[in-house]
Length: 301
Image 1 (tube, rainbow, N blue to C red):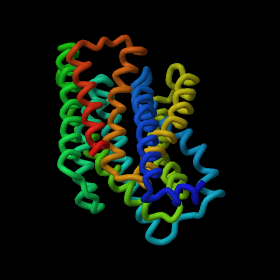
Image 2: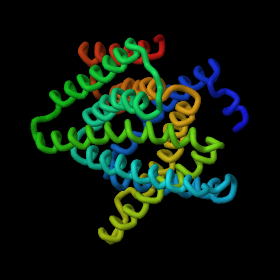
Image 3: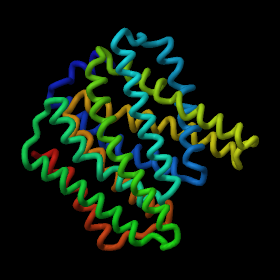
């Protein structure tokens, strides 16, 4: 598998597979966000998910792939720190505001910042129409968040504003981790070695927070079995979501892959409509169309 992935780098077929990985990751990430914002406290949900990620990734990282060496340990430490900051921002955002308000803000802030970071730090070149496409995509996603915000109940406005602030911070962290992870996975000779250690090392933090919160509460949360199931399913989805987009950035341009991944907002809207009983009026449908248009412009250019 590794040899096949490496043989695709810099080829048209590799670029096509990168886009397919981005779309798969988009759907998985929308499901992942819905799971974290579900019936349980977001901190508990993320702790349960990371616990299963740790259990499932540890045997692979420790026994099946090479260990990081020298400078690679510093790279992985940077990955851990960035993703911890991202997870804290997301947990705080989901604790304060609705999923359909928070999620579009995070995904709307990320693409433009990612495009700028990729051009600045990774030396990738993008034409004007791609910048326009990302601008349309980001603006439409943020307008969707504004629409959801306006339709939210008036009660708890301060919490909503705090949730939006944390969501904005989460969006910036998305751009930072997308750029850093793309650099890191390209640095490693074997992308699957990076992914194995990525999932192991970035899942060490929230299980500790989960244990602390459970000890502090001195009791198991209600529906503990459901929380464990949510954690297991969430871990499997996370492997697809984060693993897919990182492999995509190894094969294709970072901003192209990340912008297509932001179509996760469309999948999130579908989840809200089909599973959460939310309704989509003409304005939301128009904005979803603009999101798709922005992503298409980035790829066509």
